[in-house]
Image 1 (cartoon, rainbow, N blue to C red):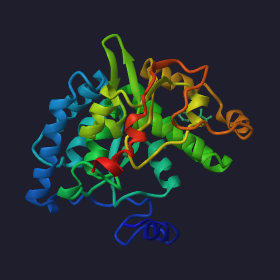
Image 2 (cartoon, rainbow, N blue to C red):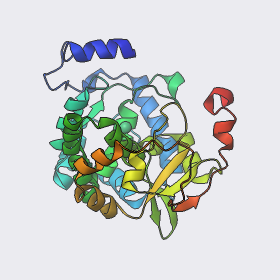
Image 3 (spheres, helix red, strand yellow):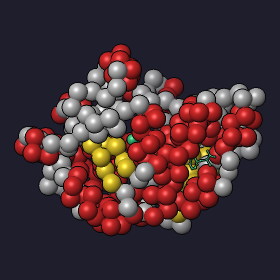
Length: 296
Ligand code: PHE
Ligand code: FE
């Protein structure tokens, strides 16, 4: 779906065949053999790469949900396990959904996941999140009780941010935690962000490249930092624990924070501020060389 089609779709409500909350049937029987094989290929690549790179919560979740390499998972089967663990569920949607719809699902412990899989030529680059990103990337973390509560709180916070007109600040929090977050452990940095963990190349880049900055997570700082959606990140934010993330965000009333942010400028993506806790000061060589535009 193009951006124009997507905007039209939002204005006109859910697409034909979808319920009023934009959910659809996964249509598990409808996947082709080739689509199942594509999942397995993606799964096997990541399963080999992630031990020692992804955090324990992710690896345990992957194990607990049995998202093995036997093809695209049946949401109904995954949901039995997920529901028993943390009360979360996956619901199928046709693609990106409007913000309010997305937040309402999260606030009710339902994670919207695209039911379609990327085309084989998009193995490493996606414009719209597919079932591999949404399920392999996001769902293992939902088996962690702390992270499960964080995403639900985020959904409630999203509805509030919409009303307060500060969605952009809150979206940055999602981006730099749920999608591209790193976790400090005694064994070194580990990935918990879904956007990293579902990408072969970024799973390596985020931890091993000299190019990006890796900075300590600070709520206000993150909310002032724009992000790029078209290439590897130029900065990753590191949390000390999942509990810290949950405590910080749920014990802070964001309304005064949003008000304060109105008087503060954005921080350039590649900047390092004097207050930042620096895990690594990046060279930004990758971004300066033109990133994906030049390496493709
Ligand atoms: N504390 C936030 C608020 O006052 C809600 C929130 C919690 C947002 C956790 C994101 C994550 O809006
Ligand atoms: Fe995502």
